[in-house]
Image 1 (spheres, one colour):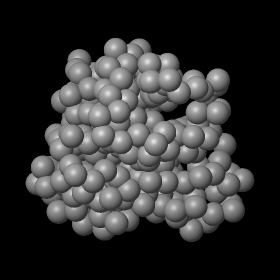
Image 2: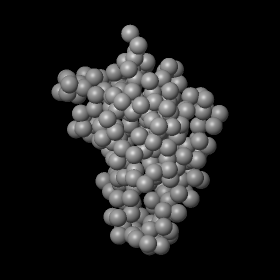
Image 3: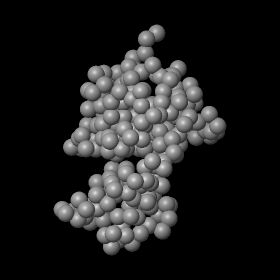
Image 4: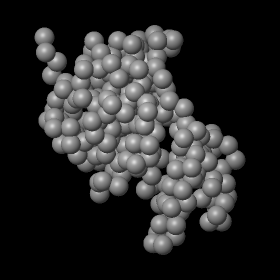
Length: 231
C-alpha cells in the first residue's frame, strides 16, 4: 500500500544535533555583556528557557535596540560554537534512509543549519530548510511548517512533522499534518511530549520505554530503526 505521507518535515536542534550546551553558552555570553546574572548551571537555564526564543527576550524585559543587541550576541555565539555540537547519528542515519522527501522547519537560522549539514549525509537528503528569518511567526505557530511543505511541493496533509518539544507537536497539529512525531532524546523528553498527545513517539533502540508506553497506549511507540516502516 502506498503511504499517504510523501514528506517528513522536522525540527533540527534536539532531533538531529545535540545543541543545548551551545544555547546555554550563548545566553550566558549575552548575559555577561548586557549586565544580567549568568545562569549557574544548565538545570537553572532549562527552567528559564523557551524554544519560542521571543519569550526569552520578553523574560529579560528587552525591547527595541537592547533586544536587537541581545539577539545579536546570542547569534554571534551560536555561529562560533555550533560546529562543536554533535549529531545524533542514529537519528541521522534512520532519516537518511527514508523514501520520503525531507524538510527542516527550525527556529534556528537556515544558513547555520546548511553549514552544519555540509558534508553530512543529510546534505543530499534535505530538500528544503525554513529558518526563523523566513517567517513572521515561529513555532508554535504553524507558519514554518506550512512554508516548508510549500517549498517541498507537498500538500501539508501529506506531510508528517517531527520534533523534540511540546511546541513542535502543537505546531504540527495546528498545521494539520498527517502525523505528529515526538522524539524521546531531545529537549523535552517523552515525559513532556506525551502531554500534547503526538501520534507517535520515536525512541532509540537502546531505550526501555515500556513503563511510559503502557501509561500512554494511545500513542504509537516506535523504535527509531523502524521509522521507515511506519510512515
